[in-house]
Length: 311
Length: 311
Image (cartoon, rainbow over all chains, first blue to last red; front, side):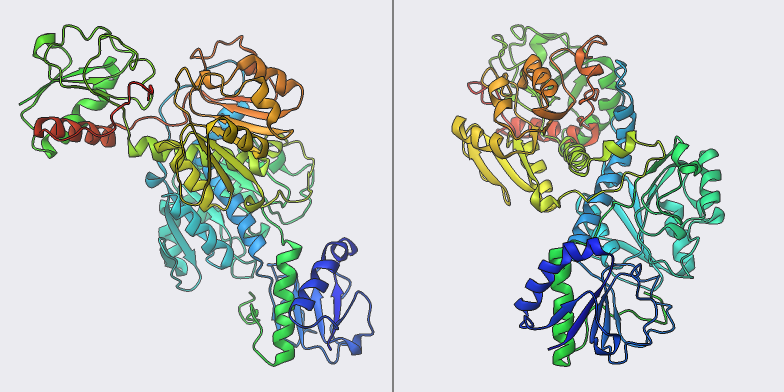
């Protein structure tokens, strides 16, 4: 039976211990040793949060795989001491929560809800209805598990959905683009842009001053992806100029976002505290247990990270 | 060729004249007389807004049908001078717009968006994620064209959707209830209730003090249907008591809602100015032209109102 080290902050252990033991039992590994402390040379698998104390994998001499608890791997993928397979978390709970958050905020901006949420002053602001979703173009940058699921949900609501990814991908009901010329085409048409790209050196500042200038005047940006995807100073300038109509930002280069950061006070920015979605312990535990079962059975791991691409 | 009177406020004529002439032409009635003024005894069809000047249908001696421009017929169905078929508007644009508005506001409350839209004060309000939609119960009261479409859209997003109507109806993916006992069952479980019932004597004050008391503490009410569905004083008491957590109201007994009405100032109420959806001229014109074609061909009209039920 394998030895499994759970390397994450202690509050995660409180959430995960019971679901993990249950999920291991469900795949026939009820006798596995699951622990938060183990002599490194005895460990077969690490269930891993990149902000845990384990940063040097060298002493883990018999390690078979690192199973990330997070969808994002940018804080572990470049670790030079890691020489075994690394799997990212693909959790249906995380995906479903992201679809709900993205769909909700796209509809919020599509419908112009904030005018009324803020405007409870007795003034009856009637006027014409917003365009229908079929006449609204929404772009999803990043067509991994999360981006593809969000693109499909928005297409089901009749939005005109454009999808962009580094390399060519197909998503049902979505017009897809790739490469740097494709990105320009997408930005040029997008009234609402949702960022769900991985955080890699190649994606940093995807929305820089040049990219923001391509977008239609008054376009909206929604970022539940990663903070470094946006050049913050360029975004603030574009917001001040009215080039960008609003930005709803859930992720930042520094979290929590410092109280003095200009995003907080900007009338065209909504800051949300990295809540768009999170991994849910019961479904995530099943994903981890399945990968350990595969490792023990000599089957290929699911959701492996391509270390050369960084995601 | 039939004579068609367009009886609505003049700004509607500006919106509808071109689409109606086009739609009539498309069904082979390009030679019909379409006008805003006609001797009553010459009129075959009235395209009708209940707030128009035509309130006495007696002089329209050869009238074949009244084709309502609105989904709601409560201001015409009881007119004792109307003795010809009355068709309500069933417009795919109206339906799609309502689905978008309802889905958006359900997600807004589901996700707790207002906390962050209002909370741009530098405080990082992290915390646990909301439940997933699959663990959130939403009830739709009224399963006509609009209610059924909204119920299906919310079920597609994985919400647990309960539907209620006066008489038994089936909607794919939705657990349906009917009758007064069914209403109690639904209200007892609904964390978010959406009102899309017609306005009839039988539906007035559907949400009265007794009904509100059945709902789970902190439940949310969304009313894009008709103002009289709610007992306003009972709702204000339930909001003050915390029994109801929030009400987003788009329709009122008096519109525009008077500035002094307590809904405006209540911290747990969002007033929107009857914008949830509106009939869209291009698609509505096609519905009207099709019904006139049917009348001329001796075929049954679509979307007829049952005068005994009032909708």
